[in-house]
Length: 282
Length: 325
Image (cartoon, rainbow over all chains, first blue to last red; front, side):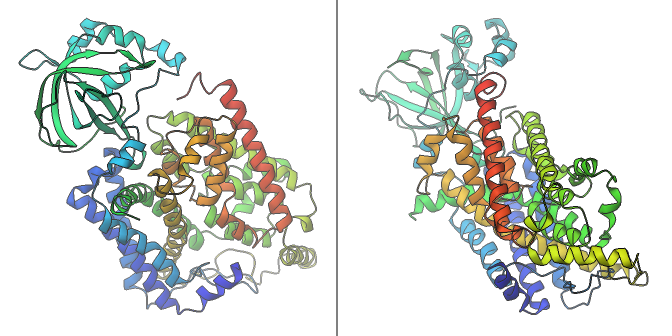
């Protein structure tokens, strides 16, 4: 089979093969550079990777253009080959046309289909309705003791009405750490995130869920970081999956044998979409 | 595929592609320039005369001649044909895609926040040990049991010829450059063409691998939930991810970006994915058959699979819950 495809690839004129390969490379370059230039790249990659992606896009553009513009020129590799060996540095295992199709169609269709966000079903799969697990790295946990309440107040700014501003990640991961719960339980906090319907244990319809995506490298590795919002009454009308700022008292109750991060809400208002959903571990 | 599934697939697919493409480009640019500018006999001259020592050094040559697994097979085919000892060739073939700076950099970058140094170091070390182990075993096996008959015959014939004609300098096999008058820009064009060809070869398999990964990542692929159900099982998880690595056929320069997305799996299962994948996958089975006997490939595949599985399971049982996430 390998020999067959190799012969299939070799049968095409080298010039046409170079042009097809260049087109495939240039399409990748165009898509990467478009997403970078349009700013949409922030939805796909963590900050560290965006410049690398841009450099890769430029590099691909140079490679593709160089080979396209020199496709008709003769080139010599400058060394001799053994007797009976093919003097060919461009022969491929696959037909160039098949390579072009395989490299361009998925990228092209994906660029058309993407809406820069996951559906609710995939968000659920990525942990939207899961609670933080208790810490399973006792070695590391013991190396970093929980901060005191004074340290927390010194390291978090306060809103005008007296709430400490927390990131969702801090609130979420406190569920897995008993010492942190002791310190943070009862604190008046404000956090920002997207609000969605609460689908678990919500018989009175007084709860919603606040989440953000937690991206390490790219959005494919992202996880949802959710906490529960308890309004104590029917929640106010806020846009589904829209950005909100909520403030209230933090609690860590045990419900059905599981510890939950619950914010008893006293204030909830729609918020502007942040410039990017940067939410890294570091 | 409904509209939601299309949207999910597209987002995951593009994000992994954007992340991995620059690293593939870097690897293929280097391999393209090595292909044109590096004389074929250069690697032989780096190796010690002692057979075992030469194999140990061969396992590290990827640090000097970094190539991914797609590029290394044609290189090995040529080098074996020119008399590079078989044990050295296999040690280099299996180690180079893992023990090289590009793979190290991409692994370290991909695992930011997930013990990057441990994953990078563990991957290099385990990959090196397996490659050298295979090389040492192969160096004690008759060539005809390892190499394809046509290649083994050619190596033996060349070897016999060399004994009678000690370097007749006919410029056909000495491997160094006898074309000093050839213009530099001509070689640059050849190098860029070679790099582009390598990029497309790898890019095709990468695209397929990313597409399959995106389907699993977003739960669209049948079996994605079953795969997730194995994630917490210390014995089944490494085996499942090695099988996934075999099917995905990813490039070693970018597979770490996919492994890092397998959030439900343990650290050791991801390590198994990252060590096994560059040594054996669907595309490599085809490529290896251009050099090696099928029976040997099967035995090597099963042995490597079993060894990595034992290491991954042992790690998970003894250390997994203590030190690493």
